[in-house]
Length: 512
Image 1 (cartoon, one colour):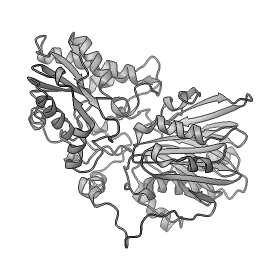
Image 2 (tube, helix red, strand yellow; image 1 turned 90 degrees about the vertical axis):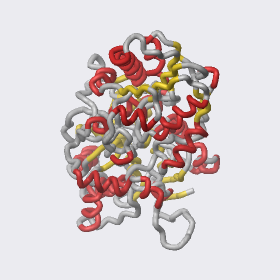
Image 3 (cartoon, rainbow, N blue to C red; image 1 turned 120 degrees about the vertical axis):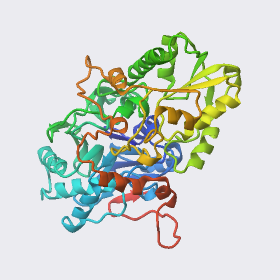
């Protein structure tokens, strides 16, 4: 999972890109990068770490230009090596730099084609570099020194015919402008907006979430449609085209459950309202299954993403809502960390219990979802250590039983606690006195907004195993298991010798 942003303006864009990446930091805390464009040259800064750590004043001063793209990432396909921080760059044709949120499910096949047929070199294991090279090859096939917007759209259409999976992409082409496009199912989010510069000219921004736009003074225009590409030329003229027929409009359900900020509007659906309705639905299920005499004294969220659901759940049950855990905001998200011990340690660093809210009470802890169960087990134990009488646990999402293949680094199947276990078995493993999950139908009802949105369904593959693109085989899932399990991540990247990372000189690119 990643966050992307692209800006076409009439003034330097380094600051607005930095601010947008800071707003999108929740979408990726592993690495960050910005590329700007001026006078036919790219200016690059990227590295592992948070936005605030990657970009110093000296870097920002060197990121000159009125066009730029930015990226924050968690490692999904590929590794956490700094070499795989985005944006990526190729010097032919013209010079293209690209940032990608998502995952190509046919990346291995494409990598072979790029080497054998297109005679292109790949320097990393990242599927994003594969995507960039496919795009570059199709643009190069135009054989035009001065391509028109229609030419660029034709190349993107050809690219759509080759790639599979989920992708929301922003890219720059030297001498041409900014492009952005989205997969035919709309699995990964992408939205664009506009604002007026000081002299009254129109500027554009495209980003993963609406909050990145509104936080920088851009007015949201609309979501990029599934299979649509937009192009902003160097004169800041906007061009759009449906480059491939849209398939079933099915954004990722986990965006609404967990990944997106609650103040975002995604595919014309309010994340905040969706999470409120999740709480309503879950409260009704508790009434149905546990009865009115449920024994809950207090509802406590596991911050931050479950707060909205937990508040509405408590309201509907007529039970006190309290903040029982205080969060240390300088610890990364735990479910993505490799290795059980690292995750276990991080939970204790991340949260501190307020004993007053637990002592001698029956506590209902509300989380957005249960993935591995490590975090849940630790938090339940923390609640007991703080004096709780009984600890009940509620998940605002159904059991996560299947790996995600569309750009969210959820573990492989055998690392998912709900895979192969009943609800009762999961309850025993995490150590709760009671456990309840949201029903999938209720979750869909909670998120669906037929009044405002044209969404036709949702990618719920992590819950039901129905992969939207329809091309996912058991062989592919086994391949992912080899790439993404804890053992593979702990092994890191194999290198020859012990030479430390150093910047690489690339023609046409200035790296800081």
